[in-house]
Image (tube, rainbow, N blue to C red):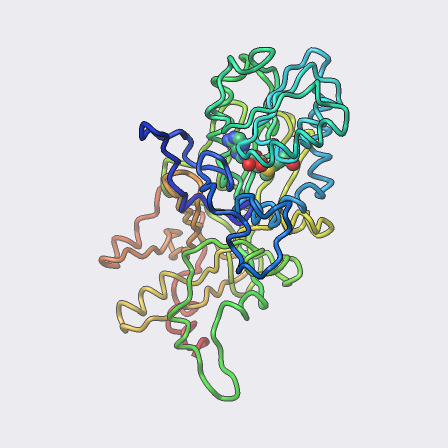
Length: 437
Ligand SMILES: C[S@@+](CC[C@H](N)C(=O)[O-])C[C@H]1O[C@@H](n2cnc3c(N)ncnc32)[C@H](O)[C@@H]1O
């Protein structure tokens, strides 16, 4: 989750004595009191003869793992902190009443208080983090200006806010995918119940992008090849081109792999956190047409996002590979999402016609147009991207598992034909399969 998390699976909410769920959110941050099993301590993860510092031994194991996975790096992502500082500085007044969703160490609430806000209510789902935040706030002499509520934001009511509904909502609940920590859901809920009408929301909005990339080094760790005359390519029948993984899981910073952008960055989800408008779902599938920038092989779809401070986009914060080259902490907390891509239509055709399980490389030519078929999970968070070539009439060449008729080829998905001559022809299928062999 953050940054290594996806939305699923989630532990079920804890039930109280009456058997009622205490939680109402569709996703909970790791270590949230409402879902954590208090008995599973960090110490219980180790054999007894291992030393576990007493400061963390009794804390929830998930909290300690998560905090050590990304929280330190996140706090030291200074351009991130700067983004929030500048965004808050532009709007905070001595009369400002502020709510923060997910205060963690207390960092954003403390920025707001230091900038002179009247009062900040800092909401935090985890008790241990809430206690640490309190210590940070007191140590900085900001204790009186900030109230901490140790709850999920969805369980906080306006009555609990010392100065009533807020003028400003601030949060940093962004995942490796823009919405993977339920930023839209939690902002929407807080806007409706905890904010004054027309309140300012930071970040104001954001865009999730996908870019097609070529990366020989990524290919080396995701494809079976030949070595000393031995052919291992049968192993490619096990390739996973469905899942979206995170660069941290691959153990790399993407720019260190070396890569070529094969398409422009394509916006696939646009969200306005201040109004709740978002085009993520429905529909469950959307097509975007993209032009290939260079001849080569598309090895992956790379997912990155950007968020804006305000409607004028005065401040911008991104996870785009080009923007994080000098930001090691950002790559170690968010990084980017990666999905290995192949020519799925050619692969399915070989499977159907020759009964061979293969993963045909997606070789492309400069100038060729392709369709990005973006599938959204029904919760609007998880994403999958397929690439389809176009036939001579500019219609996408799709694959339907039941059959693969000419009718399917002529279904152009509503496009008016800004196509190319890059059909399935000699670029794909058997030709590409031969390359692999
Ligand atoms: C990514 S951290 C950000 C911490 C801090 N705001 C910062 O910017 O450094 C998100 C924090 O929000 C908490 N959190 C996430 N969603 C929450 C929610 N809906 N209600 C309360 N706490 C939440 C998590 O437990 C975590 O501590």
